[in-house]
Amino acid sequence: MFDTALAWLREPQQQLQAALRWAAVQTLRAGKLPKHVAFIMDGNRRFARQRHIARIAGHSAGFDKLKETLQWCLDLDIRIVSVYAFSIENFNRSKEEVDALMQLALEKFETLLDESEVLHQHQVSVRIVGNMDLLPEALQRVLGKVVYETRAYTKAILNVCFAYTARDDITTAANRILTALDEGRIQSWLISVYLLEYYHPVWFTKVLWPDFGFYDMLECIVAYQRAAPVVSRLRAQQFAVEQQGLRVRLNALLAQLGGEGDGRSSPFEAGTRQSEKVAALEEEQRYRVQTYVRALREAAMARYATLAAAYD
Ligand code: FPP
Ligand code: MG
Image (cartoon, rainbow, N blue to C red):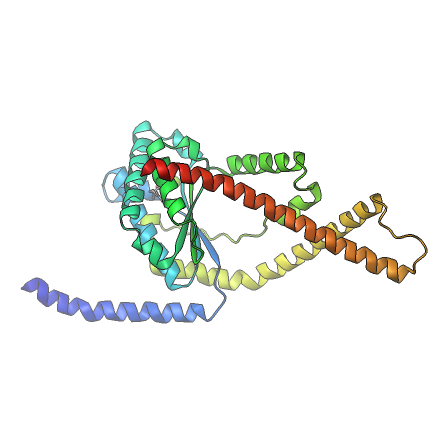
């Protein structure tokens, strides 16, 4: 009885909160929004300590917060989200904590599969970034199943960084690039231009991940909106520098191949032919990179298919 009366009081307050959120989202949507947001879910154990609850309960609260945050991203029309779930360094934690985290991840991904309508409804493609070999086999299978089931979706992407480290990622990427170079699939002057990205603005908050709230997220977006003009100017400058460098290297390559012209045509004609050749070479290399990246993706997907079949 008393509860019902309180609910009546609570309701207008909740409606007001929802209206305020809606207004805040609309205001931010009028400005430039990031296409891709990455979250480092840090602070789960401190959160647990503060509340005198078990460590794993802190991690579980962290997972619940992730679900909530993904909904906010959808509201803001941010369609690509990456989450740093578990780094390779995290394996140095006590066996008890690592085992509990792996078990938690297994349970959460199994639940996600059982309630996969939400992924299908929003057409979310889930991807795993990291070295899956380091994870327990049962977890690999369920991850494989989620990735494989959602592989065709393109409306939204959720990258779960699981068993990652920057060093491991760079080593793996460098090894793949070296193999591609050895196999003649790509050429060295392409690497910086097409395979690496620059200037990712990072926002640090003191808030522990499970305490992260809707307005903390808006604060990050406002910081992004403030930084956006500077970042795009820097990107444009960097792009111009890279294009210039690429052209210099392409021209050198053409000269090496004897593509400077026959010496009889006018400098203008030679220049035109030169730029056409440069454009053709660029196009060819872009095609090679795309083919190479597609082959990598297909190989990874074949593995997910095997894992998914083993899950069923
Ligand atoms: C960092 O907080 C959090 C982790 C190392 C684990 C995060 C894992 C989850 C939220 C559950 C699984 C998630 C998915 C997506 C399957 P911390 O432990 O470093 O806490 P602290 O900084 O307070 O010590
Ligand atoms: Mg931490």
